[in-house]
Structures are given as structure tokens and as C-alpha cells.
Image 1: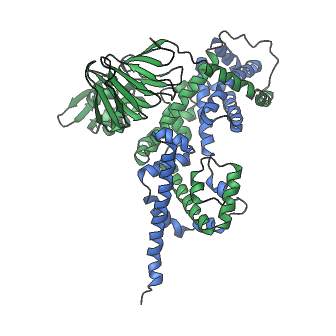
Image 2: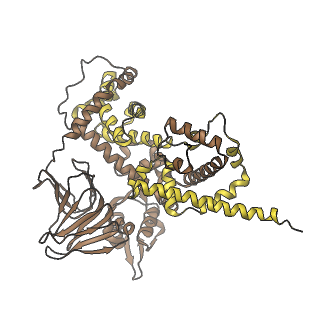
Image 3: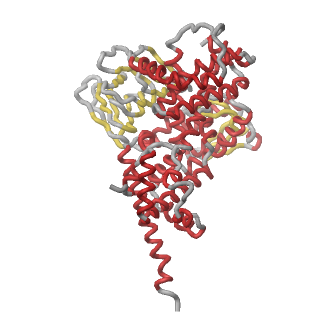
Length: 185
Length: 375
């Protein structure tokens, strides 16, 4: 590790050769880390590059030259969590951004806010936890691992949550239609 | 055959083909489109609620790794957002218990980084200095990365296929917590005053450790059994997570998976534990007893309580919540800060005694779990 520490010290003094050498050495563990987290996929290249750029930009601020591992780890974890953020953008997946269907516009109306509150209240704590983790960007498989369950059980919870939401909305729609069916006077 | 709602909800990661199929299905089925829109709106509402009360992703990383990322590794901006995140965290966990799971996952990710780092650098001793190598700019370096993907992948496989167990002993001191990652990827969070010895007496068909103290084990799945022996008992697992404590006997609390526990004097007398059960062997010849336990409450004892430059007002609030006790703090101590790691097993009184010593305050307590710190 002494050689890495020396490279850090030199890189901080604008030694480009040392900086290139340092980044080259870091590439392997950082790549191995991302592969262990998200598998071998194209995104790994971007994540590795962005992490190396973070190290490159921040190296001069590293106060202790022997702490490179923790410093690189911090950058890699930031990148991983940015990756999670962009993992599921449901709207883009379901609708063509250039041709959003009318129903999507309709649901953005303030009048529908009540439906959402009702739907939220229909969620069990466990289902809400799963949806939160899913929205954070974790896969079903990862969520199962995090809460000590199986992927099948997690998907079943999601399905039940959907059914409860649909039932809750059905009751609500009947309730709001009463004045229409039986107008006053 | 067109996709059903069930099919769509089951998709874990959408491929281009999935996306096309979903779009095709909803363009031909208005009720499916409406159902999915409702679901999507619900998801967005959950996300907005989370975003409004939970620290940002960057803050969560900084908070999860607070004991690893000290001030020498953080910029002024990061220190500031870490402070802001800390103030927000307790309330966020109350509203969204899943925040704790995210923090745990970040720590697991950090342990994976540690392993990747060790694999890369421990096998390459005394690297030659880079002087004399062709100058490589960052841009050129970036362009060269894709070309080495295959090579790196092979290297990783070679490292991982070398599964030889390294014998060694890991010991923690009083008040010290330490995470140990074994050669097979199993992670052990050792509590204070604990000892883990790896590979002693290991056979070729088993993973074997001896242990005393308290620890949380996250054992990597493998056809090879993972065996933990304490003074009294043998615990055998294949891949699971559980907490273990040795104090007047051996106690195993299972969180996920399955384990068997047997007294060392009669290994045939084994009991299988299900998640949420706690098995206990009081001596080498006693049959294991099995009880159901509240896992969340029990696991609190397996997390260190860490304060770092934390104002005493926050310390008191945190300890009050954790141990459900009342703690009064005199006016002059509100701004005093505390840095230290405490073992939950000490209880509120034990921890407050240490805190009082550290900040030069006097602790008084009453029988109804009320405490007062003053100077």
C-alpha cells in the first residue's frame, strides 16, 4: 500500500504521471466492486469512470494520504446510489415521453389527490416499505435480501398492495358517485 | 399473448422488449392503462413522501458510514450536509422504518468495496513505481477502460475461485466493534470483548470458526456448511443471517434462513431454528431450548451506539428514544458535544455513567428510570 500512498502524495502535487498511475490501479477494485453490486453490465463502465473522476477531482482535498481506500469508497457509494436513483423511472418505461396518454394527464389533476391519499392509506406497513425500497431503486431480489424474505414473497406483497389499492379506489368511486345517482331534491 | 397487469408488476428490470410490450398492451387496453396510471401515481406519492422527510442519498451514505468516514475524508460541504442529515434521521426512521434497511445496505455495500479492494491489493505486493511508464492522460485512460473489461473479469474469477480459507484470529476490545469479512464473503460484525477464530480444524468440506462474545453473522450461501463452535454448542448453517451471544451459555437468534444448534456433548440433539426464533444451549450436555423473540428489539443490542461531535441535547434525545427512559440535561450542558462508541448491552444507566465521566458531569438516577445530568 506504500506505493499507493506515494502516488497520492505525488498526484496532489500535480504529478500527472502519478495521477494516471493511481487511477489505473484503482480501476480494478472499483470495477470489481460495481460488478459485485449490479452484475456485469454496460452501466459498470460509466460508474467506474464517474468514480475515478470523483477521485481525480477530490484528490487534493484528501487530508490523509493513507486514507485513499475510504476516499475512493465514498465516491463509489455516491455513484452507486445515483445509479439506483435512475434505475426505475416508471413513467418513462410505461409511456413514450413524446406521446403521453391522456390518462396520465388526467391523473395529475388536483381533484385526484384524494384518490392518492386513499390509496396510500390502503397500503400495509410491509407493502409500503417494499414500495419505498423499490422507488429508491432496489430490485425485488435486493429487497428480498434486505428484509430477509424471498423474491416471490416480495412480488406477492406488491400484487396484494395493488389489489388493495384498486379495491380502495373502487369504494371511493362508488362513494363519490352517490350524489350523481341520487341528486338532492 | 398480450401482457397482463400481473405480468407487468412482476417485471424486476425492464428490457427494451418489455417496455415495447407494455406500451403496446396499454395502448390497446384502456382499463390496463388506467390501472397502471393509478399504480404509478401511488408510487410517486410514496416517493414524494419519502423525499420530503428522509435525508438525501448523499446524506444517507455519509450517515451510514459515519464511523469510517471521519473529517479527514470529508469536505466542508459534506460535513455540513452530514450534520443536517443527522438532525433529520431519527424522525425519518420513525416515519419510514425502511430507512434503516437502506443504511444497512449501504454498510453491506461498503463491506463489498472493502473485499474488492483487498482482493486487488493484497495479492500484489511491492508494486514497481510508475516512473518511466508512458504518460497516460485521464481521457486516454477513460477510452482504454472498455478494452480491459474482459481481462478484469477473468482476474476476478481467478481470485474468487481461490477459496482457500485463511486461518486467523479476530479479537475486539471493550467498547470496540469490528466487521470481519471472511474469505468466502461471510460478514461477521463482532461486538465488544469478542473473539472469532477462523479455519481452526477446518475440513475440506466445511467452513469452520470458533467464537465467543457477541456478533451478528451474515453467512454467504454455499453447499458447504458453515460451522460455529462455542464453548457449549455447535451451530451449523448453509447461508443465513443471525445473531449470536455467549454468556452463561450460547444463544442464537435467527433473522433469515435456517440454522441448527446442538450441545457439543451431544451433537445428535440438534434443534432447527426458524426466523424469529432464539435457540439457547446453557451447557454442553443440555438440550437446546427454543423461544420466539422480537427480532427488531433483540437486534438493537447488536448495533453500536455512535456519537461523533454530537451535541448533548441530541445524545440525550437519542438515548431516551432507544431505551425509553427520561433524561434531564442541565442548561449548561446543552451545547457540550460528545464523541464515543457505546455498547447497547450496557443499558441506559451504564452508558450514561460513561457519558457523565467523559463530559465531567454528575449523573443522578431515580427508581422510575429517570436520569439527570448536570455540572
